[in-house]
Length: 545
Image (cartoon, rainbow, N blue to C red):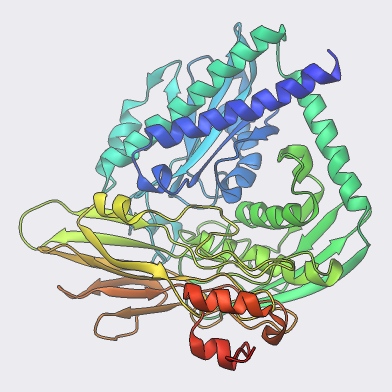
């Protein structure tokens, strides 16, 4: 087969996994999937090497799933796999980092021959235990653990597993609906793959897999070889839970790879903000790939030259049974740490620090009289850091890429009221290039309900730093409507009738604010992005300029 058909088939695979992801979005029950897009989808060869990923989805899921299928092959046994099988896990160390992510893998067959796998992941609203939050002291408190096992054996659903999950979770219909959606979207992938192989007269994926991986590897290595050799270190302090956390990294650009070593990073926390290494690798690889080879398709070979290490016993390589429910809070700050070092090696390439972690919270609502409890998870974003040639993006999730949930979808999910949701003026770090703005929100319960508020925030005490003279972004603020300050992480019972007021962080700026284009300052002022005082005192704008 010539190169042109291989390239066409490569594009077809990307189209297939995108259809796979869109099928998951259309059929999922949880708002975290339907509205926020907290998912991933991919196709793998028979050896478990990722060949293509869907554009829709998060790098934490996709890059972690790049390692996951090999675990399924080992645990299930390739010789026992059959058509109609579907496998499942939420193991944080063999999946995507915490129990709330369900990973489903399906072996793909063509004309009776095993030709590959489809995998997908989605974040579910509830998996039992203490509920989604940082309060757990070990993995055993954080929910139901599903080892790698068969969800379907030759088409027959494991009814015992489904019954166990139903009785151990607060939102059983959502959970079981999401699991079936995951299995169904893989089914779409296997059907489309078989049709493609039939169309091109191919017996399996071997030839196209070799083509994809060889071209991706060579293209990535060529990008790395063009970079200046060198080593740089960076450190970023963040809020943590029990104590502040220091993220430390040493980045080395070599002739044929880039290494990121997190030696020196803080020890694990007693509470659930620890990160399995698979998730650390996922976001460190993503940061490097965005900076070095963003246009090369993401697969096993294009990720291979990025080598990520972290000593066991650090918070970014937590081992079982460490609590890991909020592993994303630290995991999403790993790219900013990597960029602190990379900026020294590749000036004017990477953005300033941003909000990093998603500004998520979960509301557990209980009726004051008779009625059903409800769990509502809300995804929100702060601002990204300024870029060397552009301002940061407001209310945009980087690095996760997860979408902010619409107010209407959140209020539809349960008896919750979002009283306010708007951009936060002056939260973007001032600079020649301004950081992106965060948001302000106010959330409460409908009449007749009380609620617990589970906070999952960082950057309260350590806001995003600017670069090259740029100022820091606004810090996170969490208060009750009576002015009481709430912690950035953990569950709080909210008094009846009270609301929670939130101010999400902004991104850091780049360059001296006094060097910002005057027209840009006036535009920011007119749009309400900055106050008149900031325009005057920070940017130096007056009526005569």
